[in-house]
Structures are given as structure tokens and as C-alpha cells.
Length: 341
Image (tube, rainbow, N blue to C red; front, side, top):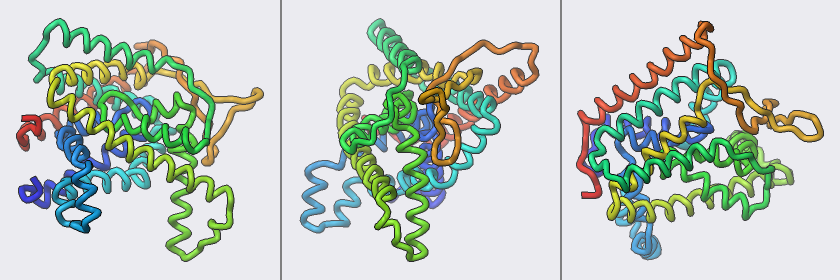
């Protein structure tokens, strides 16, 4: 696989990683859906599945080149480099647009998810009773998640490690938004806003040879939180990839049916017409480290067709569908054989 990639393929793979990283940070949007629709989902799962006992032995024996080739290292490096880059660049831009043009951003995502359902379902041929029930179950889980009440913030390091395991499902399981699950666990702001901002400041300090943060207990606490969350995410990626790899190999159509259901159920989370419910304590609305109000959940409503912004939002939904159709055309043009075959 590595030797067949051109420079253009590598750049596009990095860009896909950027898109996946940005999607993972947006509550309601799944990075796994991006991976699925842009055609590298199965390669991602099977590459992560290669992180096993054999890979560990290669590392222990200092056979680094063999390890790199065995785990499809260039692919993983490009994808995760793109995702990491996204957290400090594209996702910041996305945060700005969500803050100032929230309705249109959610409309675009809604359209893209609608398009992704079509993209996956059109090639799904096994419409038997079992798979239809599986789709309904997946959709039911997705809808149920959107109506759950969030827990309170918890910075216990073992719980943060658990959040890493659960939150990473958005990358490995299309339709389940890891960031929205973190909202439900109460730790979205702590892990994807405050900690990321603190890490950004620490990296900036390191580049200027300023290591005063080592003496700062608050900043060191954030470093421990980041380390625990990262460790949980890595552990979760490896474990879930092994589980999903096994399931894809033995029950490919059933897993695809469940993914279709998850993605359909996630439409309730990204429904464009909604009002934020802000988290509060003692009658006071809480804010994050950037001074933004902390969102707890949403009240959803049916828009008025007499409102011009409703039609603008519908236009963005159509744009989102078109984007997915273009991605489908590109994916078919550059299609590689399935790794499950």
C-alpha cells in the first residue's frame, strides 16, 4: 500500500486527517464518518489492528523499520499528523464559524450527514430483516444519546482515561460523535477546550525556552489531564480497532447496517434549528477558559418557512449534500480494493 501512494495521495490523506480531526471536535459530528465517506476507514481500522504483540516485539528488538512497515506507519502518521494539526488550526476556525454562524454551520453538517447516509446505503445490498432491525437499533441508540442529560465535570485521572477510551469512538465508529459523548460525560470543556488551550500555551512557552510552567500547579494539572486523556485515547483506538476489525471481517454487512443506523440517529444531534441550554451553577452561567458560555444541551424546534434564514440554512444543507456527492465521485475515481477481501 505504501509504495503505491503518489505525493498527491499523501497530501490528500493528510487533508483527510485534518477533516477528521476537525469533525471529531464538533459535538454531533463523527470523525469516523469522514473516514468512512472519504474512503480510508477500513485501512485505518486494519492499520490500528496491526498494533499488536508482533508490533511490540519488533519495537523491543529495535527493528524500527520493520515496525513502521508492519503497522502501515506512513498512513497512520499522515492521518494523525493531519488530525493533530487540525486541533490547533482548522478546528479553531471552525469554532469561530460555529460561534458567529451557528445555524449555517450546523446546516452544512446536517447536509453532509444526509449525504453520507446516501453514500453508505446506496452500496448496501443486504436489506434483510436482521440488518433492517440492526439499522433501527443503531438509529435508536443515536437518537437516545442526543436526549441524554450531561453529567458534571470530573477531573479524576482514571475517569479522564476512561473519557479518552469512550471519546475516541467518534474516530473509529462512524455516526457516534466522540465530542458529544464527552459533553454527556461532563468533560468536553475540560478536555477539548481548556486543556487544549493550556497545551497550546505550554508548547508556545517551550518554543521560547520558558519552562516556568513546571512550577505552576494548575498548568501541571492540565498536563496530567492531557496525558491521561491521550493515553486513554490511544488505548481505546487500539482496543476498538481490534474489535471492529474482527467484526468487519466476520459480519461486514451487519456492522455496515449498524453504522448506517448510528449516522441516521446522529441527525438529531446536528439538527440545525436549536437553542443552546447553558450549564449553570447557583443561578450563574458557567464559562470556559475562553470566556464562552458552556453548552449543556439543546432545545430543538421546527423553523418557520417565512423566515429568510430558514431558506439560507436549507441552501447550506443542499451544499453539504453536494459536497458528499463530490467526495463520492472522487472516491469512486480513486477506489482501492477493500481490505476485508
